[in-house]
Length: 178
Ligand SMILES: Cc1cc2nc3c(=O)[nH]c(=O)nc-3n(C[C@H](O)[C@H](O)[C@H](O)COP(=O)(O)O)c2cc1C
Image 1: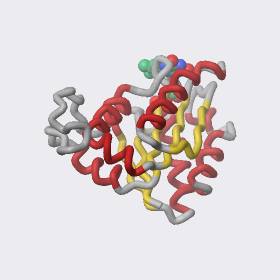
Image 2: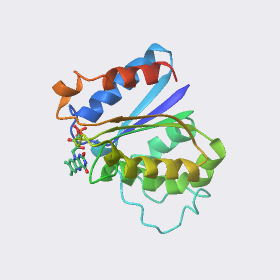
Image 3: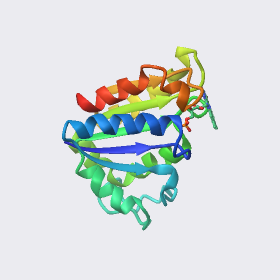
Image 4: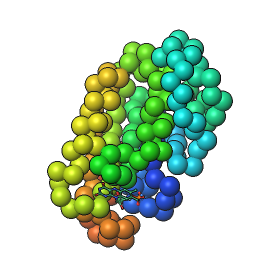
């Protein structure tokens, strides 16, 4: 399968990117084709809400890294969202990319992709993940996408501590068994 992995942290060696690495390692071992897009290090302009795209009838007016990403999204079987928890939601860099889905909204709906969410949060309280998970489920419902797995790594201090938990293995296995 073709898989697009969208990451959301500026910290290249941070916890959520480590989880993305593990997911990708498993997916590659199973022969899947991966396109990784690091939102925080890409040139992605804000959606202007100008509606020039007509939600999928014309390309977005911005000429930035979404031009290349768009083709991958439209040719993917699975879209993977990887994000640090920021104020009970996804990071703004990842959200900015998702806002640009507006220009391919109708195509994505017709494709009926599978999707995965991987998040990392500092708080040990399990309920803290719910607003993010609810938002993810709402996006999936809107875009006719099917959830293929959610991993919420909770109570995470740093990469070294993350490595002592079962979360990286869960990410690896999710990629491997997609
Ligand atoms: C701006 C900001 C907001 C955050 N908000 C939350 C939060 O609401 N809940 C939480 O548990 N952790 C929160 N954190 C902690 C991060 O989710 C946590 O450190 C995560 O592991 C960072 O991911 P990264 O290493 O991939 O950058 C926040 C961190 C930052 C920098």
